Amino acid sequence: MDPRLKIILYGNPEEELSLLMRLENQQFIPQNCKIISQFGDIVSCRIKRKHLDSVYNSKEVKSLKAPNVVPADDYFNDNQIKYTYNNHNSESDSITSNVVFGVIDFGFDFTHEDFIDNGKSRIEKIWVQTGQYAQPNKYGYGKYINKHQLNAALKDKLPFKKLGYHPGITDLFGTGTHGTHVLGIACSNGKVAKKGFASNSPIIAVDMGSNLVNGSNLSLGDSVKLVEGLDFILNEAGNRPVVINMSLGGHGDAHTGKTLVEQAIDTILIERKGTAIVQSTGNYHQARAHTFGDIKENEKINIPWLFKKRDQTPNELEIWYGGNDVMTVNIIDDRGEVLLESIPFEDEIIKSNNDEVGICLHREKEPNTGKNHINILINGKQKSKFWTIELVGKKIKDGRYHCYIERDDKGQSIFLPNIVQQTHTTNSICNSKYSIVVGAYNQLEKDKPILPFSSSGPTVDGRMKPELIAPGYKIKSSCSASSRDSKASHKLTSKSGSSMAAPYVASLIVKILEKEPHLNILEIRKKLFHSCDPFQVKESQLEIYRAGNGYINPKKII
Image (cartoon, rainbow, N blue to C red; front, side, top):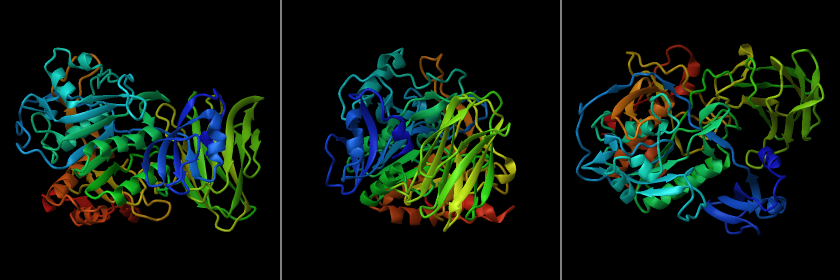
């Protein structure tokens, strides 16, 4: 059973749980399961806790997953906020694009001039997933804000209050929200920010909200809400072509493109022509959160896991290895005390001084990857400076393993630097076969180096991710109102990251689909990658795993 599913197994039997499921056959649904959205054999669903065990064990179910927290790709505020007035074109093109721009993020400032033409909003609809549930919708949470409501609010002195939606509610210092900045890169009409290539596209947005998790307000909703956000955008787009931008994902998982979110993405892209989903590769190249190696039978390998001083946040470590191997872990603290000597495929409590400090979950042949999975979860009560994870090879045919420390923005733990591996550090949900994944380079330097934090591929199963690179350093774009403001002040803010590179590429795909709206994903990818200039390796051959097909060249598309 999925480790997180085990954690939510006990509680109020009548509580309805939101889950992701992979069906054995997409035509057959298990009993006591309400389907909300479906992409082939991947569904989001609602199941009462009392039925969870029976649904999990039913013959119709291939895989059942609890929701995972989905963080926005971290980025770097450059604190270069300034006013600017009509430095660029004053309006979008007069003809509305036939291609919808969809975005899943948080904090969309609909009052910013970059998204208003002739007093009217260019945003067709926002689904505020954390909004108070008022009007019924098929998902059972959040609220919709339509274009009529947005336009009415724009005439009000207090537009945020009128709609009950403040995009910058978590922005205390006026640095601007992630979603507004990303949207401006792609879709600005040029009134304030530089005009985006999708300046005349209708916009459909999903605001996943911003939750304080492990000290970070970049932790958004969860994997179920993400899949349902994709469903919402596609339903609203109807028969129109659509490009969806997502700059989301953490460190963990198997990096083989087999999460249920990634399988849903691939199904969408295979089945729906005129559709692209663009994702940032992540900013984890320097996170010191990944290592890998090979182990022999009866060999023991020490993996030092270092904790931040006085860290009281939960920490998580994952080990993925071949389904034909058997490995166990021993956990030893910084005083040499053995906290756990694990048994293969058993779930065990980790204790220190008779206190429960965590749990070690060990799953055999996870159904989507076929790999075995060790998941060590710490509850924040451990007081050690470091643990040694002693990996033991019991029965070995392959021997390769990958270890990931999950992202923790307040108390990020790391591996000892001399064992860190910087390849295979793409974000946790960007490894599907057909999504278009973008890394970031410094466009301000002559030799255009890849930014040091931009994550590296390949995927664990050997595919190229990211597939291209785009500008991502000190990108000036639309700045949302802060929590103290009643509407946008029409500012720019500067941010760096692969989050800034992805919407640039997404907006260029809009230009491709405007000319040829019926292209399938293979044709879109071919045209896009043929529009790249080659990357010249400058420092290490490993750089190629961060560059993909090279630098996107907009002139070859426009």
